[in-house]
Length: 272
Length: 329
Image (cartoon, rainbow over all chains, first blue to last red; front, side, top):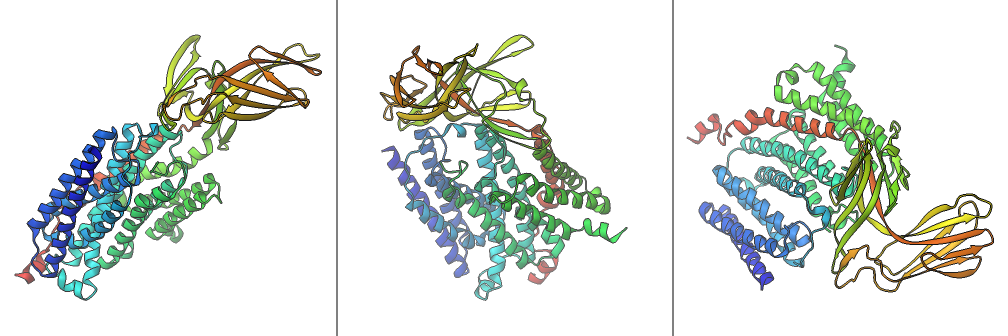
């Protein structure tokens, strides 16, 4: 029964996210963006999803850190929470929900295809540094995603119909400026995430860095983000150039979070 | 200022050196390049670029937070090669009731590592590892002891909790098993040699090991069989739990069934089987730069956050700057 109610909560949440995404897309398409409707369904989904995650946490005695299902579910929730906060804070860019939410449908579909079996927390995960590492990582990914979504609007505007659909949003230069701020936030939290991960790894596995695939990709991600921030003043990137750079950072980050842990066979694969 | 120095201080050089760090990391990760040189060389290039930039670009020195960040980054870039040159990493096994005396099974270290490992000795006083059903490893608790200024000190180490002695960190691992303890009294020798033959993988019931008696080339093939599972796969349990076992030794083509206290007489000498005792595998790690690396990163992050507090986090975002606001009006 407990596992069933978690599944019901997840389905309800995904339904809420889906409706929010459809409202956002149709709102942009028909040029009457339902700000409140998108917010209501997004926040409703987040609350129900949080309840489902909390039930599972209570039942298993540990957080959503282990299996593919848990990692996808918790990251979907944290990404959408971050976006919901951005949505609330920055009213002029709310229509970018039409760009942010549809890719989440892919994550939702993936989540539904993965078995939600019960998991056991490995002893090496029984430390506060895990929570610090995960929390900092979620903020990093949310910030990187937001920068990418803003860049996505800039890129879409350059392709015919996008110019009309998003003409009510601020100018490219303003979107680019906001994206840059989120990229800076991403670098800071990425750095702290790596530090927390190294501290965790030191006492969990006896070394703070061992060149396993997840660590290598994390380093590549950090270097790419640092290069992106340096490239802007050096190359005088246009908003479109900045958008491509943000997209590259997010793609590597996404692979780092959702590709490597499920494909690597090294001890620190992230998914036990 | 000389052109080459200005080039070293340029953002182009920064991008190049960051790209080389990335390439070095990938090369090390793919196993083709030693980590010490693969990462230290491009990081030193970054350090040269950063040092030159701090000297050349007054703007970097004037912006407090950014200056602090780059100084901290410089410290990090210089510490990493030092870390690689002085670190030590290894593995050891210690039988319960025995002491670690500095001997490692595996060892890798930087060229400048000064070996103080024998001073970090300790005694393994016994351990317990809990297992959940399905042979899922749970909590490890290992009692250890050592002497400090003539006083015996005890501690319990385990998951996420190492023993730290003289900068060396000893971590319990999943590597453990039982050791068959022998005394080999070679004919003509005054003192017997003691040996512990380690068997691994307690989840299996049938284990083998090969040994050569000390001071001879006489091979001994050992086979250890537990008559019951060491850990019940359905109930779980605690390791070590000594189950009934059968230990056979094949010497000179003759099979001997060994019991604790049994002595086997051979033409070369006598072999006494003392008994089975559990052993624990330890990961050993040494890197004195750890806290300094951490400090440099945290100071750097603090500096970066301070620098961006006004430019990024404090300055309001203008969705429609004045010029376009007038157009919209």
